[in-house]
Length: 308
Image (cartoon, rainbow, N blue to C red; front, side, top):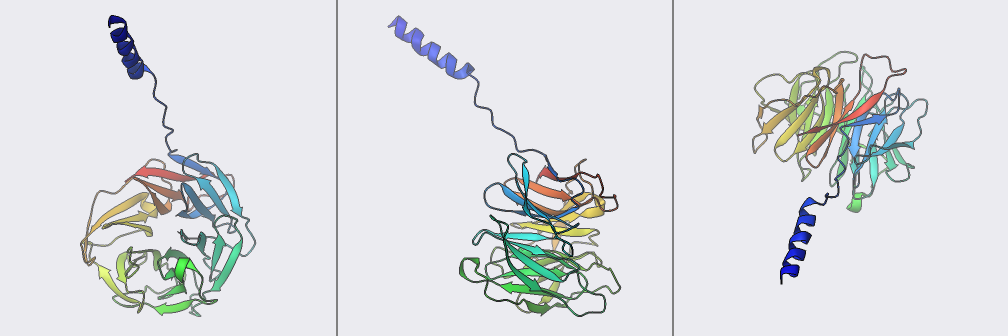
């Protein structure tokens, strides 16, 4: 009996003192290619993420777990990649094409181009297709230079239903600030049902809920202006607003009907350098540094992980 007791005690001591298998922490900084000129990010399947280039439309795919990144879509002259959104049903990656007034859809696994959608408004100030969010029935794109959004209709499983995009004029409370190169509609998000969109107007420093069927906008009262608004992430009733030149992510607790919200303490990080968009994975936000105003040649670009 004494020998058995000693054996049991020894086994327990070994279990307590034996080193546990170390958990590999997700990196806080993920390096993108030098001179990449990053702007948009989308979280894909598993721990995959995508980031796009303002320089030539290159899209890279990477791992949030390892930080490894590889080219998915080669860049090309006359192409840029701004905001992006991933549809887990189809595996399609939707990418806003900026001043070239188009949206592109890629296979998120192979990088093959699936479809291109022209989105020219014909307005006097041109177009800048800036950001996109995928819902159950469509992919919605903002145009920063025109008071309208665009819908690429989607069917069951995220199937593309049309070769052209629907134009939805913005109305109601929407305020379009005039002038060339004035960025109005920028980041866009949606409620889980897809029945309500949320859009930030960078020039008007305001947030709006938007009916995706009619384009009718209602301003969200947050107690004052919301400067430098760029990309949006909506999680439950918490809205994260990337505020680029303020080097922070604003945190707003929306009231149930989304007509108003309370601005909380912003998220900051010493690694932020003009962040533009963000993606959500678990308890972390992944924020892209665009480094506007810094000459891109020889400049490193990054995705920064922060707790939320």
